[in-house]
Length: 508
Image 1 (cartoon, rainbow, N blue to C red):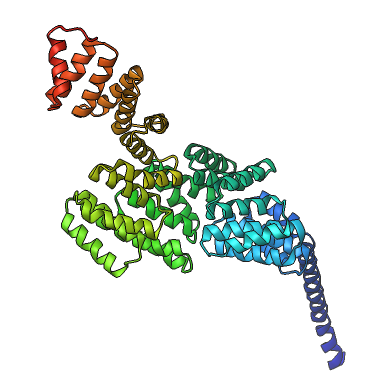
Image 2: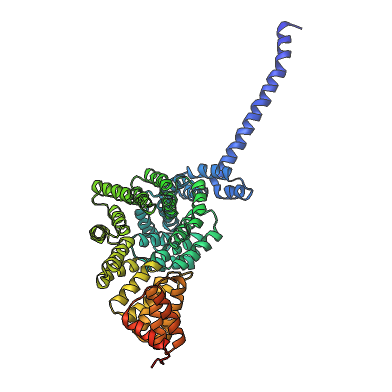
């Protein structure tokens, strides 16, 4: 055999093997191309199958490829991608996906993408939510998601009744957890804490991964004196979604309510850093500094607290929050003349700050005995937060002091009927109003409750004594009046009647 024959004999097997390898590579590339085409043709179906098997990461990968294809199919993939990202707490990535979807879709689908975008932006605190909500309604005026987004928008505008109506419409249309969260937000804005809590809890049960209901519920719990229950809820949100600005803002307020303002400063600073264009987040840092000073006040460091707050005021003279804090510090010192100008300035700077209105009304009522002057700010405070028992109690007391007894009874009955209400002032003021309208039986019931909550209140026992005097109940009159006397109550006419009844004279 020649040399070339030997060479060919040796080379042929290698060539054959190379041909087989090339064919395998070619077949593999064809298969990969087919898979890629299938993903582009129906990424939603493929992603859904992966989700069903628990492989969300691969589902996201498929949707990302699908979203890169221009047109409606890519838009639908981007929309679903946004949902998955949001469900994992990846708000920035979800917002990007919703924007991409909105750019590629039309009609109802575009409205949904923009509505979801608005809600995600609100949670993230980007400041663009309002524009997205308006665009969603323009794309699909009757759509569920545009309606949800607009309900949130109406809350921001202070139109709570409209917000409730829109949210209820979205719930009825099958908006699910997102619609229920919008309803909770709207009910809270309207002042119905119980309805808000119920809506948020129902939303959480329907979709445990959605962030809005958890943050909303935490806010309701804080405002109804259950801040300790709110803290772990917010911690879970922050762990799942480190970019959720609303969660950091609410966590800061929860920690303030729990007396841990030093810790709250970190959450407020994080919110401000994440949302540079969010005025509320920026103002929250100042709110926490004020809270720290007020904690010093409660710990007995009065001079230090006033000094810190005065310095803050001088540095930020147009901050209503600082003015409010300094006013409260002067109230604690019982310095009405110093407190009132600061509280009046706080109200002038921010008329919709319910706490500022309340503190001004309370200071006028309790420190200056000016019931008539207290009415306007207390009316405003209760209009802003109708479910706040402290605000209602002070308003009812002021109405009684202004001789408006029927309205006082109405307001105080609402307050004292609230679940777990335990303010002696409310029952005592209600009893006083009933005595002044000669409804002695109702007065006695309210005052018995009031004196059980404040057994050392001589004025309350004396008023209870008058109620029993009006009922001609000598035994209970002697019991209540005797208790008032032992506590130092010294009104002459009252004590004369007590002496006469104790001597055996009948009440006529």
